[in-house]
Figure 1 (tube, rainbow, N blue to C red):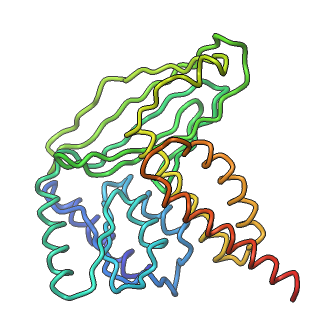
Figure 2: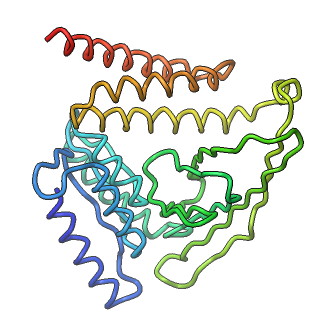
Length: 284
């Protein structure tokens, strides 16, 4: 997987230097079982993000029913592309054609966000989006935007304690490239503000259900991926402690939130399995 992907990226980079209209997409067809060269999903995601920063988008087709979604998902999330499922030959050809058409129909490519936060706030990207942490800001590579196909980036903010009424200003800007290298687009800054209040004022606030569900879905997927990483290195105790901590907050966040019960149940089941594995290790 690694050498084939790396070679394809080099070929695409050469073509991009020769022509501004050259395709800058790589499509990996694989079962995701990386077994030579670079194999760690985190390292693969890092390289996908570096390629995206150079303008090369990576998508993937997961071949078969048991392909490694953690590996291919990490690559495509960080690489600005999409992960497709394919079991039969005709499905693979449809995906390849769809990727080519998508490249031509893109509204913007190499889209990036910059989230600006105060010095006393730590911003964390939820998921495997390629990102760069800067002093007072975090840059997130989003990739290609299509009409009627929005992408959502979820951030976790670690805010300081403070007095009631303290305000925390936030700002988000975005920019992207027009298809075929014909120019760039910059969005004006969107401003937001968090204000510290008493629990009696905070609790009755109406939730934005759509965004809350999107945030929980990204959170759960990220927690599942991190748990898989713990298991890959054999750290079952680490997986158990991580899941217990996340579930404590996830159960509170999911309260009265429609459509997330099955996602929460997956996390509970995963924790039970992790705890059982640790108990069995202790007996051995």
